[in-house]
Each structure stands twice: as structure tokens, then as C-alpha cells.
Amino acid sequence: MKLLFKQRFFSWFDSYDIFDEAGNTVFTVEGQLSFGHCLHILDTSGTHIATVQEKVLTFLPQFHLYVHDSYVGKIQKEFTFFHPKFEIDFNGWQIEGDFWEWDYQINTSDGSLIATVSKEIFRLTDTYSIDIANPDDALCALMLVLAIDAEKCSRN
Image (spheres, rainbow, N blue to C red):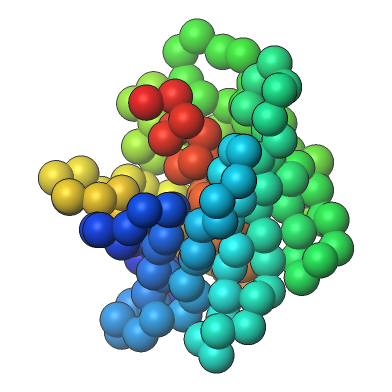
């Protein structure tokens, strides 16, 4: 399954549309005014299904992940010099990015591929392509990509 993650052009808060390969909207993401990023993921009917919430006043950027209103894990940036790496206590997954922070790979703890994430360059807004091995992992992979993008936005 392939998803296209695209930030909306004129928006006061973080807001994104997530499309499938056919160009159909699969999810929408609405940012909420808060101290730190707070991103609500909605399904096609507009029902809230997940939240990515930045925790502030931490040494390294950290995001808590919720499906509906239940806490399911967190992602935290690790201190590295050459390529971005994140500590995840979520589904036993691991994620690592390239030096330029454009491409990421999400794997299980035994190394099985869950998804590859590629930032599309030469776009007016942040746009990522997410290739997901199992469609059941789409929401969880999307939450991780949102957290990574929000962490990069906080730095800039």
C-alpha cells in the first residue's frame, strides 16, 4: 500500500491530507493550538481515530501516540551526529533515517520491513511518500511520520 502525505498549503496550524495511490483521501490531519504540536488524525468520515502529541520541556524531542484516546507508545529523537535515529516504544518497531533526513525505514525488531518513507523534494509544502508492506500498519506508520515531520518543523 502506498500513501501520499501532503501538507496543506495555506493553513495556520499543521494540517495534512493523506491520499492513496488512486488519489482518494484516506486520512486527514488537523493541528490543534497547543504548547507543542498536537495532531489529530481523522478517518474519511471525519471521525477522530488517533493523536500525535508533542511533550514539551524534554531534553530531546518526544511525541506520545494515542489511538482513539488510549496511549499506545512514544517516539523520541536520539542524540546522533550523522543520521537521524529515533527511540520508539511502540509495537516493537525501529526507525532510522538517512543523513539528509529525507528517507526513513521502519522495521520490526527482527528487521522485517514495515514501511519506507521518502520525502519528495521540489514541493511547496512537506510531501512524503509512504510505502507500507501491510495495509493494517498504515495508521501506525502515519503517526510516526507525523511525529518526525513535526520534530523537523520545530527545529526550523
